[in-house]
View 1: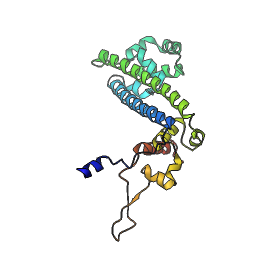
View 2: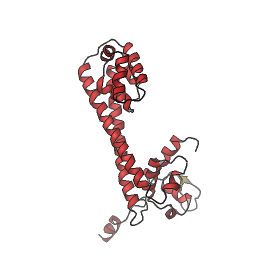
View 3: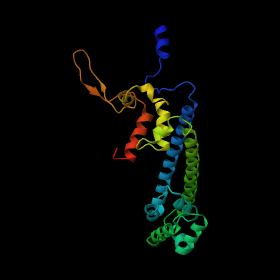
View 4: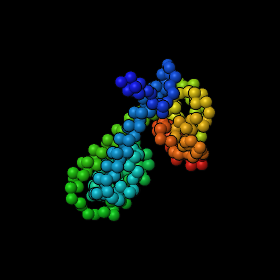
Length: 241
């Protein structure tokens, strides 16, 4: 029984360091965690929206970037080729411009050309159109929530003493920098060396030796996955690093 209790009280060794009283890092951990949830929800919703358009209006799905506000605004008013053809390119452009859509002329032209290539009306088009409208509104709402959260993250991040240092690192902007700080725990001096930081985020191999065998390395099994994600995105967005 004492041994079991001792094991149950052991702390995980892959937890991050967190200085007592570092409220900025604690807040950033909460805010960036919420942002990750919203971005994941937006990705799922965009994928569902693409699937619905692919079934009924594939040309428009290929022509538009469904993560941007302009194309999403278009889908809240027009979801079918017939509706776009009836409206006409000029009226469609005016409709978008009245809703403050940037590059409304390009979006209207892309939608008009896609509608001109499809004259067939597919089954369940009315129901699918309603679903496209609903999903487009959901993505726009999620975009707004992410944008508001980004402002909150930047404002809180700027209050930290290491803001200028972290954001000056190549590949780390405000959002990735805030995620890096939240995942690392807020005090880089606690790691001591770059090698220890590399081991903490799982990018450095760990020794796997026993007895007289030495020099064997293996991929670490326990590491901070959130920090590894930040460093992975840093390299993906800036391949020259």
